[in-house]
Image 1 (tube, rainbow, N blue to C red):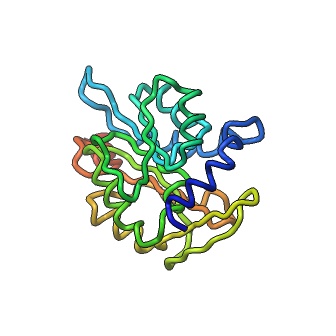
Image 2: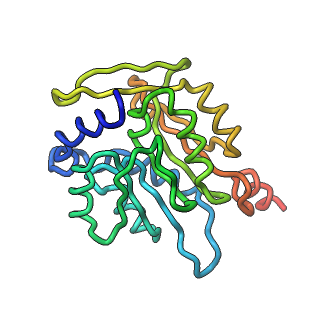
Image 3: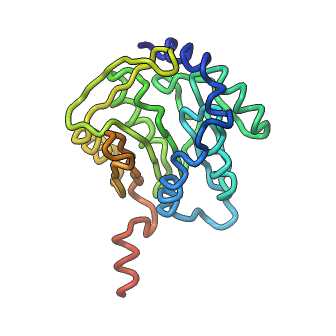
Length: 220
């Protein structure tokens, strides 16, 4: 499926994620874990966050706003964004395809929860490189993937509409993360036995940003 076709699918079912049936706790605990790795910026400076594939629920936006970030969202679905803007009129939202969209700035935190896997498989390497490159030193990216060893793509139905999923496979993902100057801080099959994996990666270069640095400082 093309990004345009994915947008058409989610335009039709966007209201589910902003309705009462959707579990708004989905992904929140994992994001809180990721936020522990974010290094503090300079005093008086704001921290920037981006929610890629933000959808209509606004739950990640709300969490990041509560944590003191200036937040932007982006999605390929116009209807998802219409609902998102109604919920958070003060937040900047971008209607865009992550495959071709150029990030307007660098961020201290980027979320791509249950979104990147809808992009065509051939675009995944470029997207990961783009998002890792869009982090400030010490910045954190959290994203989900299919927890397979090799690449795979498939189409199926969601609420009666066609949907596409793809993954590069974990070995290649970890290789790309390292090649983009990031370190994997956490990888978990959080919905076992489902092959749903989330990764927390951090951009190298932040002052004392890693657990190893903090451990060394604690024993100095």
